[in-house]
Length: 220
Image (cartoon, rainbow, N blue to C red; front, top):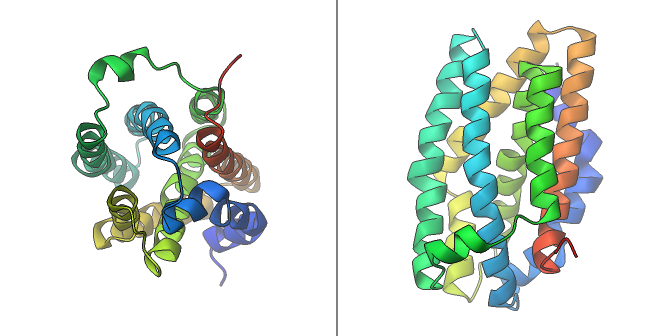
């Protein structure tokens, strides 16, 4: 029997392909991505990951599902121990100071993506909220796996690739996919529709996050 997440992947396969071939992603691999664009990405992703961690905690606080709560709270710790720690390493190497982080405006797409996540939780519930989080895990794994084949001649970019091609990351992807399928199976048809909508919207924002960084998006 086809899993719910397999159905979701088929729906967004074209959208995810656009992420795979986006200039930001391709130039990470080739080493041609200007460091200014990577710095911009890191600053915006720092904001996003902080909010993503808060989002996990908010879902955990609202669910009685023990498996969901355990995964969500463990993921908060993983975000801190792994992704955010790696970002701190990048910040030191690229001389991104705490003052620069504080003074950097949130870009429109990053702002909209985070609002989408919170709106999904507040208005659609636990299942859709979990589904909204999936592309951040799963798409990044697929990007990391694709780029790992050739690697990157730039050490910063290779470290970024290694993060999402690692075994620890694969474990978390499997866990959130398993949780998503479990919630879909126990939900109604209406619940699954809301989960699909949330998943598609997050996939859209993932694509536009690359573009946001590539053009160093501003409000004005």
